Length: 333
Ligand code: TYD
Image: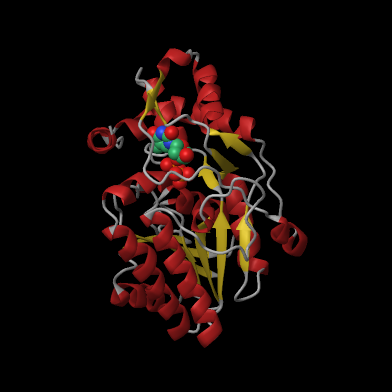
């Protein structure tokens, strides 16, 4: 396969590139990334000299750049990790979210159709379904997004559906629960809290901390996309869940424990506007149809993640975006 990994310099895209290069010795991967604040080529240092890997700087919002990279590299498959992903940023300024998550997805669908590619995998989120108090979202649950971020992702996903129905474009959509692991930009809950504590700073828990998220470790998610890439039928939709549902406050306490701090380091701050209470996915379709299941237990994965941030201060110290955190405080508090 000749795969175009859009957003390959980001957290999950870079994990996926390293995973596929190692697992499939005859695959070629092109990392197409705009290098926004969350893109970081240091994530790919260990593969930058690999002859089957190439980086091309570019924006999925620019159709001519997308067409060129597909044509010049004889791409046959697209995996789209390129997205604006941080809910708080989308509350402050939705415009980039609409462009990348909707218009960018459209350009990739057009390229898939125009160049007659074998497959496009759209990596999306459980957040398109909104919040659920009990039970789990299935692939056919209605979209009820509550943030500009999730609304924009829902728009991209619906375009995928329409391209399959209208043009038989071979696209597959995945809805995943929250990712965690090494190399995640320190604005998301886990890396923000770990790095704050490593800097001796408090951790800002939104509201009462009783919100629930389902968490999947990087390796498990790469493995799920691998299975979907090779086995899923065009036009299908799969939830990728781990079954590990945890309250934010419980995660916070685990991180405090691993790093040897007590609860005085918790600062309860004003809640995120429109904050979804709970996400939970029914991932039985992926298990029953394609035989995939998550393997990494949350506590083990979290421990590995905390250790990685502890051992890689160089990586996060220079990218931690203090101005954004200050802005957040002013805006919400
Ligand atoms: P986040 O990592 O932003 O992912 P998402 O909003 O996409 O689920 O947040 C995970 C949960 O942690 C969410 O319920 C919001 C909460 N949270 C905090 O309590 N404090 C924080 O500083 C952050 C970033 C998140």
